[in-house]
Length: 255
View 1 (cartoon, rainbow, N blue to C red):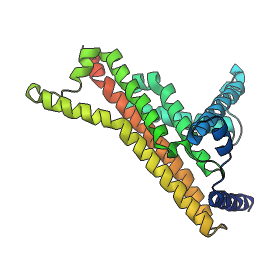
View 2: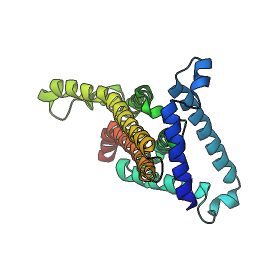
View 3: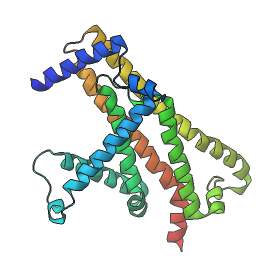
View 4: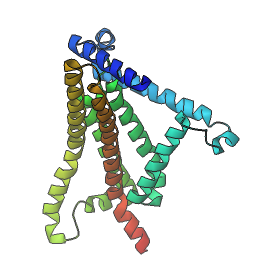
């Protein structure tokens, strides 16, 4: 009952805030002359860093770090999510690349999920609802996996990766691959922006129309959407990195 009451109260608050157009950071963003999604992004960055420090403190003792906490705790949740993504990375990328790129993968999931979920708190808008945020996250991954491809295979080896196996088709395949890769940051940004905007809009509409009880399923759906968008973004990141370095891995095994 307490959980239902809390979620219903959130629905009422969210409805009132949406109706008045009020957000907690709007005044501050105007004072510092920054877009609100940028200010919220900075806030989630601080929260993320603090969460990391809390986890680091809880596992700083070697003996205590080997023994999991009892029941559901912040540390157990973080470690369960981390284990899930590490196993997924091994299946998607292989054991070697998973070990190398896992820190980036778990960071991206946690950071994107936090930027998504903050939009469910009344008075906050998710930074990922703004296309610029999603595009920036996508551009970083684009530069990163291409950089890793060049690092692992060499510049010419990475370029050959765009040409396909048939020499006579190489010019056409190369152009198509370049266009396809160039569109990835755009599609990543549009996907997360569209889903987060749609989820936030639906939630605002229903909490405005019927602020009691009815919004509860939409809050649950919102949590699921926040998770899935972060998951899809992270999974695509794994796939892009794996594809960028896979030729090198095959050549290495061949030798």
